[in-house]
Length: 438
Image 1 (cartoon, one colour):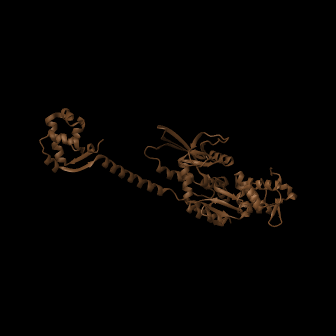
Image 2 (image 1 turned 180 degrees about the vertical axis):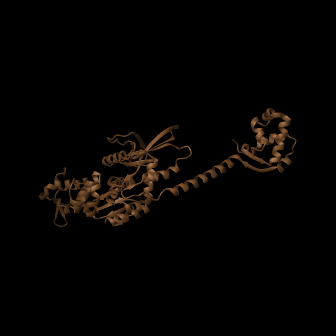
Image 3 (image 1 turned 120 degrees about the vertical axis):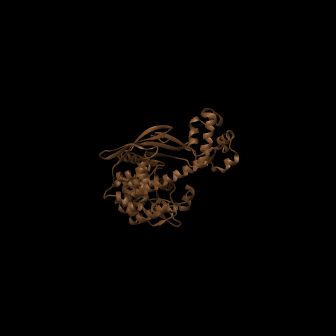
C-alpha cells in the first residue's frame, strides 16, 4: 500500500454522522458502496461513528458526492495520521505492556536460596514461577502432569512451518551429587548453544557421560556433528550434520536435549553461581568438569590452567579455586595454579578426559603414558645421545625444550652431564620406558 493511500482522517462525530446519513439517503447503500469503494456494511459504521477514522481517498470521494465544501471539511477534521504509523504505535504500546508484565513475572521467580535445599534443588518450585514467562500467547501448555519423580508438559509450537505438539519432562528435584556438580562445571565451559541443554565436545568419555546424565534426568537425546569442509569424519554416531565454512578447521559433537526451559534453569543457576558454590559441597567436582571443558595441563611451566575471559566468572572462579588452594594468578585468558598436590588430590579423581588425566599423572608423578611431545624428545635422545639442549631444539624444531628436559630429568627419564649439558637416557630407570616408542 502506498503511504498516501494509508492516510487516515478523523472527523468530528456530528459532521461524520451528517455526511454519511445524507449520502445513504440520497444514493442508497448499494450505489454508495460502489461509488466510494467500501463495503455496504461499513457505511453504517461510518454513519454511527463506530469507525472513527476514514481513509483519505474514501473521504475525498464522499465529499465529492455530497454538498459539503472542502473548507467545511477542513474545519471538521480532528486528526490526520498514516495507518502504519498508528499501527506501529499500538504495537509499541502492546510490547511495552507485555515487557512490563514479563519483568514483573521475572521478579517473581524465586531467589536461589528459596529452591536450594540441603542436598537438592527444587526444580518444581522454580518451574511454576518461570512458566508464566512462556505460558501465554501462541505457546500455551496443553497440560502439566506430576509424576513421582518428574514433571511432564505438553505445548503446541511451530516447527518447519507446521504446528506440532512437543512433550518435555523435567526432574521434580535435582540431587546435588558429584555427577551434577561435574556436569554443571562442564556445562559452564562447553555448553551447547540456543535452547539446547547439553555439551559440545570431542572427547568420547565426556560425550558418553553427558548422554547418560541427560537420560537420567528424563531428557531425549539429539546428536549433531559440526565439522569443517574437507575434514575426515570421526567414527562416531550422530543424528544430523552441519558443515562449518570457517577458517578454523576441526569438528565437535553436540550431545543435547532440545529443551529451552531446562536450559534456562541452568542459566538461572549460573546467574546465582557464587551463592550456589557457597552452598554446594564437592566443589572439586564442579572445577573438574570445568577443567575437562576448558582446562589445560601445561608441561612447559608445570601448571594447570582454566581458560576464561568473562571477568565476572573469573572473579568467582578465582575465589573458590583459592579455597581449594588452586589459584595463583590470572594471565588475562586463564586462571593458573601451580599446586600439583592439590590438583592431584582434588581434581584428578573426577576428570574424564583421558589426555588431561595422562598429562596430570605425568606432571605430578611422572607416571602413566608419556606425553607425545616428551616422547619425541626421548626418542631423539635415545637415537642421538650426548646432544646439547641447543642441538635438540634445532633438530626437533621446538621452542620449549628447556622446561621439558627439566621435567624429564626430574622424574629420572634422562641424565645430564658435562657443560654445556649433554643429555642421555637413564638406562637404570627402565620401568619408565614401557610406553616409549621409537
